Image 1: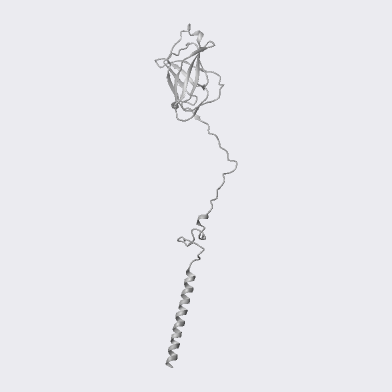
Image 2: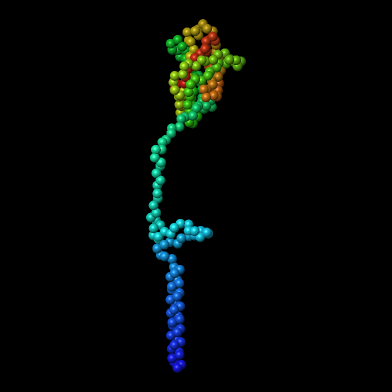
Length: 209
């Protein structure tokens, strides 16, 4: 009887050991992740940061290019207006043509960008006492705006009746005060420029120098 009881006890222990091993194996297989899926990180709220991606496909992602809207046009930007501090202004050497003596008033763009001159400058003549002794009268506007790049030049010519200079008692101003159509004024030394007091010199529109 004791022999049979010992054999039964051994068989019972063996069965319990085998059953315990099978239960552990089943539990481990349930906790093991699917080898075809990568681990999905989760935020504090429990929601996934991104959907699971099959292993081996990380480097095969494609980039979607969004095309530019159809019918897009490019608008050209007009050059800004020249300001007084953009320009270097001086009188050039005059010459006669058809009974009129023309003295060029030279405008140089001293800035680092394009700017535009249009219309006529206003020019007044001052003596050494600061008194106005004459003004230039604008001629009819004909030419369009003149756009100057850095260092480029435009000219507005002052015309004086040359035939009357010998007998009109011409005067030489000390300063020419030049006011731009857009505003802003610059004083320019008159140099050898002169005109008849009873006449009004003409000032022409801006042209390329």
